[in-house]
Length: 278
Ligand SMILES: [Zn+2]
Image 1 (spheres, helix red, strand yellow):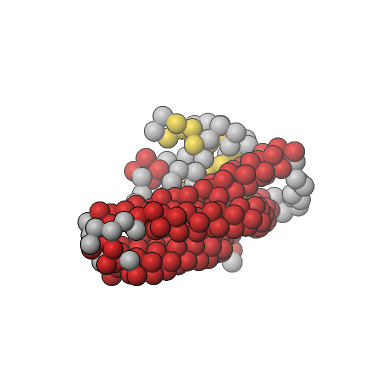
Image 2: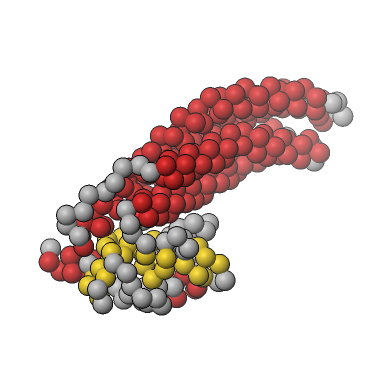
């Protein structure tokens, strides 16, 4: 117990370093699960309908008939139906998961600070915090409501290629299975990225609202494709309001795509430049 406390709270030249604040995997998984349920249902519905019609019109395709309009009409009908459904659920899903992320971030920040300053009490929501949260939710609603159009275009592209090359229904079915996997992978990437960004932005605003101005950049060793510059930035102290200067850009940990870096907040006023060892 004493050892882990010592590891997480470093006293150095009048400032203390709190515990790690990073995106939580379960939040990413739950966000992915809610969106991928909709995505999977849309893909299954569209693919089943096209495959069914394609199979029944296979002779027309073989003998130079033209089932293209019927297939396109069907796809278009399904797209409009799913677009409405995504629009209906997007705000509820985004709100739920950004609220959960904020709750997790607030708890992590409070624990992080109280490790160094036990009597600390975190302040409530500031106007800036509420504005940032709203803009994150709006951005996520846009991402969710954009998904049906992307899916529709992808599936339509596969169908056109199958028609163009005279593929049979089995071949089209195989193409659509691969397409479904790609779509779900894309959703996994988007949801991971969005939870990371929300964690970064909300923890920064909450820290600033509570008088915390500095943090330490931490590189995650678990990253599949680590950026060398992010590895080198490990331990660098930066101003939260500005971000950390990496590759000529001021950024926050976890805001670039596939960046698993995180931060530890600093309680006190370090003199920059400064580095903090693990
Ligand atoms: Zn990184």
